[in-house]
Amino acid sequence: MALLSFTGNHHLFLVCKTKTKQDWIVLLGKRKRHFPFFGTRFENATFYNLTEGKTYHHSEEEMASLHFDCGHRWKISGDKPFDFKFTFVPAFLKKRWIFFGTSFWYHLVNLFFQEGSIRGEPLSSGHGVSEQGRMPVFSLGSLQVPFDYDLALEATGKGGLIQWKAKKFFLRDQFHWGAVPADFSHGHPKVLAETTIPLKNWTLKREIVKVQSPQDQVWYGLKESFHK
Image 1 (cartoon, rainbow, N blue to C red):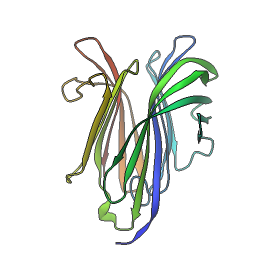
Image 2 (image 1 turned 45 degrees about the horizontal axis):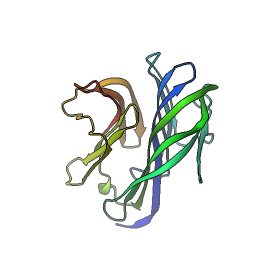
Image 3 (image 1 turned 90 degrees about the vertical axis):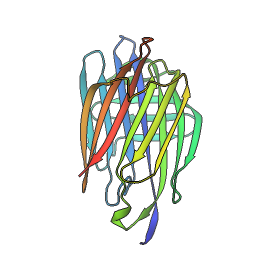
């Protein structure tokens, strides 16, 4: 087993509204080579228009136009599947150490004033959660661990939940913040959009979902799983 180097990721799950009252769920991700599995790399921009009920998705090994500038204010932009840009104010949420030098940083992000647009249409609001990961790269293929991943975000940004569990291993993590999170195991999430991304020996299945609590709280979320 040879330790090669370190690799990482950055992805964001966002809830946005345009000035013409178009509601969007946005998933953006940049992953360095070997994240999450050895020999893989993918970057993505997935948009789901809640008002239209329509998915716009683009993914490839490297999206040169997808920029993550994470200085004092975060500036994210791209042109696939169409033009978009966001300026966010990040607020540190939590750092999680997992195993073998693997760690994750989480931030909550809010649109800086109204600096953002989707398809050229200005945004009136936008908020979400950011996950940045760092992990050592092992050359041993058996260390590739598929997992199930759930992220839930209360529609107005009052709370959230992140949980994942490795398949066939005892590795797992879970935490929440703010308001009591929706229970995905009993909330019968409605699948709004589904995409699949090939990762060498694996396929990543992603679902953007909606959960409505008995108290009429609306939660939007992301469910991920890997299979060969």
